[in-house]
Length: 272
Image (cartoon, rainbow, N blue to C red; front, side):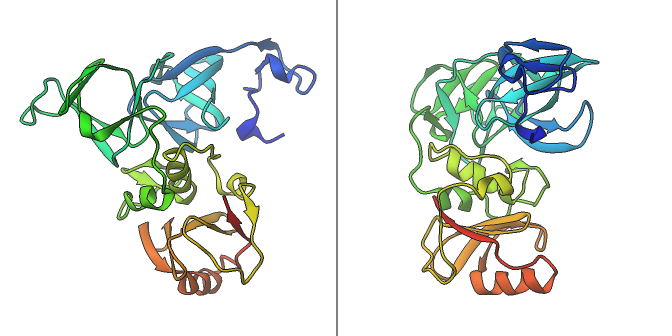
């Protein structure tokens, strides 16, 4: 079983896994949400980052131990550990951050000193709003940076291009740092489409395209451990460890460069 998608902490498992894993206890899980702007979802308490999750992301708490919480993220089924302080009660989100990122202010004034940064995709419960400001728990957010839940973008490539210049970060999912699969996931979730968190899982999306087929905007190109979005017939956009940022690159040049650097050939082309 893929540990990333298996709600089993090594001690406690979700009730749905009874008969599939040997656990000390099986639980129904407790609904919650990420309570901080951005958090590392780790492979073990205090361990290595697998992915990042953001404020308002719904989750199911499976286990708690030594100040850490084992959770299953509801947006993609990814499982891992968060610090206990990063997990709060479930949120009835009404809006999401549709810009590349935004700030939260103590007062509805642009001159106020921002007290935090909220990443793209963060989910919020808006208490009241006008054309300029939305009041949320803890402060005020620029209303033009928000969209109502269900009001999605139509073009995933356009979403990905909001991240141009973002530094590359393994397992990253925000404008502060993002990796190839994080970029694809952000782009597709912003368009209201389900998307797993890692490139090997994303390679199951959509339909396979034969080698030599004409590529169009939004198609995905995969290498072992890497994914890019097609911008047009000649260019792609990806977060990559070569330039260490999100950028456009000529498709043919990227294929040749990755092969020359030992990354191997294209393993799949998919149309979602």
